Image (tube, rainbow, N blue to C red; front, side, top):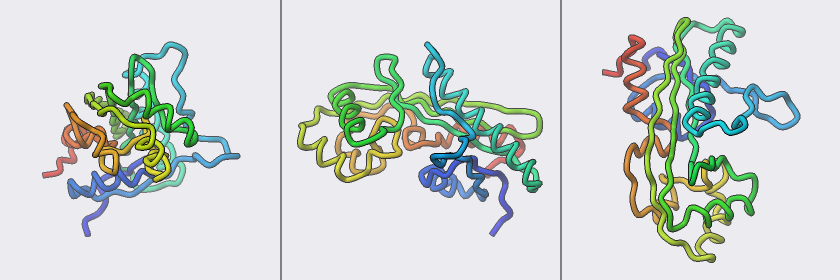
Length: 204
């Protein structure tokens, strides 16, 4: 096994799987998210903050907090990758659903409509943090109440922006996807590869 080339500031199994798809060796830096403890990052938009600015700010912050964690733990210095994915409809950012009721609300709003999926990926290396943003358009077909209820009961919507997973059962709901499939999953591979190449870490 090759030595890791970067740290991933995320516990997302989807982002880990996408990095493995490119053959990138990495180590994970976990950020504090547990209830009852001070979180490393507050994932909440500022007042009237545009969605593109918000996802870029979140990705950049995750990479920078991960970099600080690397230094505090005196780990070997490597680039740190952070990412953030948000679903946007009519200017409203749909984060991860808080519960089944919230997931149901999101899916009913998205059904029969086309929305944006924004994923920002940030790479901190040395004193530099570079960011790329992937913008995709996803159309969900109309959904019946029972379909939404069964999907929410499957548990898949939780921990997913917008309350659905394009790589899971919700693939049956998606009538059209324009843009980056990997970006909708959670890590746009084209943009990630470009950032790594500019940092002197080409994948090929």
